[in-house]
Length: 305
Length: 123
Image (cartoon, rainbow over all chains, first blue to last red; front, side, top):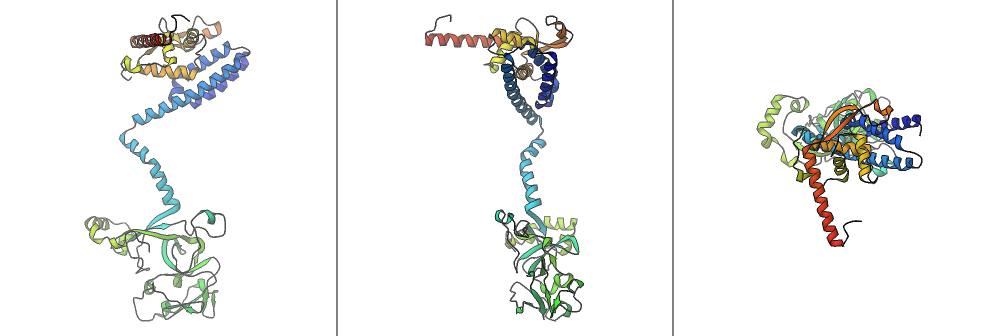
């Protein structure tokens, strides 16, 4: 073998050295190249095949051995903190994956869904359930279904997408809806709504009759014979606390794509006020520390709204 | 440097380690020299690849069986290699006692095998 070919082989071997742990390569890489080159020089004719084979085997076996030794050395040198991190890394990654793509935790700061969802309900929202907006293959794989009338949904508030609202779906695309003296009439049928509550008895025309002249501009082209007609890919939502709820009556439809998910479980319900849950404040933290056991609504824990 | 382990804990030695120690028994050698000598000892049955050789040397250094000598050109290799400086390795006293213990252990194993299998002293 001429010296040019040997030089080429040495180049290949130099590249192969990068498979070893860095410390090992830095310490012995140069010497290993020398040995490799010397061994190349002693080969001739038929011995090349055996030499290549044994070098490849040596490389694979020793790379595995040194890599394992290096990883053991690293874990032995690590402090308690890093060991803890290593042990929890998988859990943490899984947690991050789940909390970013599958569920999300929210706290409800307002009472618009009373008495089904209370101020201070901490809930997990299932982000997968309503994620499928059309007929495609994921509907056969993921546990998804289409939104139905009566479903409670969490969605981005169309007028400020940073806020997440929770309301009940009253109208699907194509539904004709109006309210008459607090009563919802959908497609000509008055609804029986056991979930709804009314906290005042008087009739507020803008609130309890709908649509009126005061209805938002979003409805301008959707009103026909006193009904609003829900457009394609939109939803009409109302809060269960019907007399005190900022819902579709006041700001319009929810685009189908704005749905975040469906409330899955209340994992903690704590008796507090709107300002406690809307903004972070130290007084609330102190309150929780002092009254955790008495002000937690235990009966709501692990229930589905 | 970790404290050298007691000789008994290191036995049995793996064949590469045993033969590397034997190669360094009477003189300092560089990596290629060790490899050549091991091949001579074993009638070419054991040809150490660079990865195995330096992996073993790394662990033997850590265990205190060998130590690095100086770096110098090899005068025995051809003129071309002669220009290049090489790292030499030498056996420590610990290494010597360990390889002796291993040779003793192997000798006893061979004696036992001969007694049981009815082999003659030679081949």
